[in-house]
Length: 148
Length: 386
Image 1 (cartoon, chains in turn orange, yellow):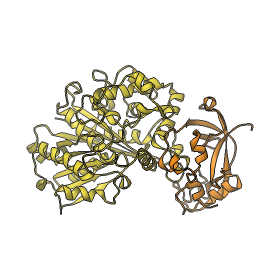
Image 2 (tube, helix red, strand yellow):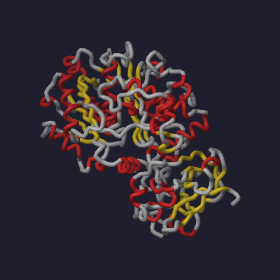
Image 3 (cartoon, chains in turn brown, green):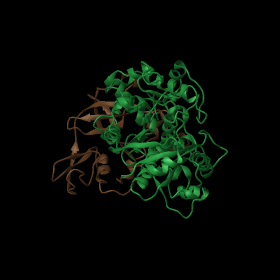
Image 4 (cartoon, chains in turn cyan, orange):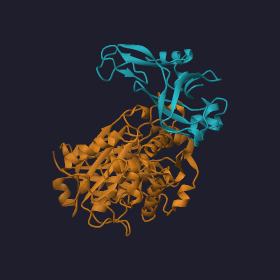
């Protein structure tokens, strides 16, 4: 899968394997071969030790919800005028909350929260980040209820 | 390093300025600032222009339009950019130009023309100041980013939606007294609380306006400043901090570490502490941003920002009056102009020339705080009069 099927506009990157990971159903991060730092979002280059040698790791497990919001005034690229072509339009129209979870290893992951009623979402709850392929073939990340 | 003072200030009226282009707005502010300084454009040796967005202005190097329209050719000019903090970066660059000895008289102009584009388009362009590669795909907008900050702040510190609304009520109160403000009207707590949700928990009145406008300051070296002005406003401290491009990557999203760092630098340079500040303008692009700024600038302890507004400690008469010009909330936020307008407002306050009802009595030390993006950049400046 091309990276732009996740990013919408960025096509060229040294970490395009991230999108291939989503296609396979996994969320990938990079780990610096020199200093061991884990980078999510993945980086090809380590800002801590300046190594450009990375290995890929799969992020797993549940995370604690740090914050969330529902955006009712969408940006142009999600606006209803673009129905049919808008990325993730199905999610944005309902609209779907967006949140950030913190995994045990410290990685912070942003994702949509489509499956839980808005009133039941609260900071501190545990959610499971997972890759999701949308009906239009694009890939994204969903923060799913635990135990499903 | 040489001492640098503000000797001239000017501002266009902020608002939906369907009567004026980018360059014409710049002229309004520049003309006022040069008249205030009592110098012609011919005497200005260098110029710094802040325009935040090529996309909003439809043009590359929008600063070239401004420089030419002001009749400044062929002297040196350059543009600086840091999203909503562009204006403070321009002030800093103007300060550097004089402190280094490159010039004695510098014009700093900030301008933005935003209302020619649709709200959705502006929301999209501004959203791309955040992490364009990793967070934009989740439909993130600026209200969305600050909503995430607000929700986390509420969960961690018990800050309430009412406290957020109180910031809007205060800033609209002072903005109504500012002839240059975009929305010159008081609002009630009820009205703010019952406005529609933009990105929960933020409602319409938690969000700043989309505005057109320009601001200008004339900076001079110490000797020249003393000869031009009866009351030069010295820039005595400057700080500039940076932070992660992804909001999700932050150590703690309830704090803008860039602000904490910039404040530390500025206080150190000016040899003052937060308790010494008599008047401040802070970056209230959203009400939660003002509450976090109280904390990150050291005006109160972390987590007590909500209580600080509730206890009216940032109104005139309180510990430290904040955004007595209406803030971005009511005065408006033409993004490239904002940081320059902040410097102009503090100079006005320290000169004792603000309009009745919004002048802080006997103010001698002022502070401006200007954030770029959702905290990727933050600039803090300290201003003083003799």
